[in-house]
Image 1 (cartoon, rainbow, N blue to C red):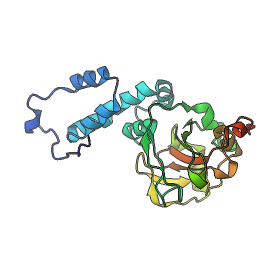
Image 2 (cartoon, rainbow, N blue to C red):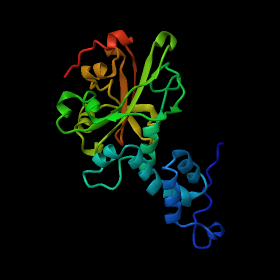
Image 3 (cartoon, helix red, strand yellow):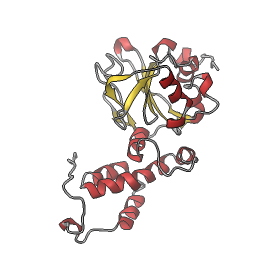
Image 4 (cartoon, rainbow, N blue to C red):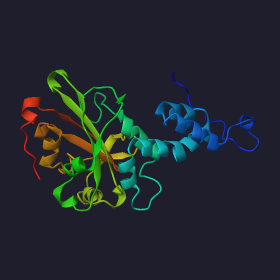
Length: 249
C-alpha cells in the first residue's frame, strides 16, 4: 500500500488532529514494541509533518541503532548525536540496494532498486576501498555486494554501499577536493540527494577493492556523496576464480 505524504498539518496548538493524539513517548514505545519496523516508520512519516519530523529526529535513529548497533556506536564515537546526511538516509542505506537506471550513474546497467532483508557492513572491508594514504585516519563501512546474477552481457553484477565516519573531515574528501574532481552533472545520492563524486574519475579506487569484492579489477566503479554515503557496482568473478583471489594491500 502506497500512502501519499501530507504536509498540511504541522500539529500546531490549534490543529484539530492533535485532539486525542498520542504522545511521543507512547508512539516511541509502540514502534519499539514492533522492533523498529521500517515499514511502520515510513508509513507514520506519511501522516503529516509532525510525524515525519518525529521519525527523522528519533525513530529512524533508533532503527539504525537496532539494526547495526556496533557500527552506530562507532559512527557516533566522536561525540556527535547525529550522522552525516540524516538518520533517515542512513536507515535507507542499511536496507535498500539502489540498483541502477539506464543512462544513470552506471551507464547502461538497468536493475531496479529494491529492499534487502539484512546486509552485513564491515569496517575491515571498508579499508580495502580506501586509497592507501587515507587508511590511517579514515573509517569506511562497506556492505557485502548485493548479487544480481546472469545479467546478459554484463555478467554477474554486485551492488555495494557504505558510509564514512565523519566524512567532512576525512582525507578522502580532502583528496577529492585537491584533485578538483567534478560532481556528477545530473545524478545525486539515492539516499540523501546530495551531489556525488566519482572515485573512478578521481583515480582513487585501489586494487584491493576488487579482491575484497571478488570482482574483475577493471569493472569496479563507485561514488561518494557530500554526506559520505558510498554506492558502487562491479562485475563479479566466477566463484572458482574469486575464491583464489589474492588480497592487495
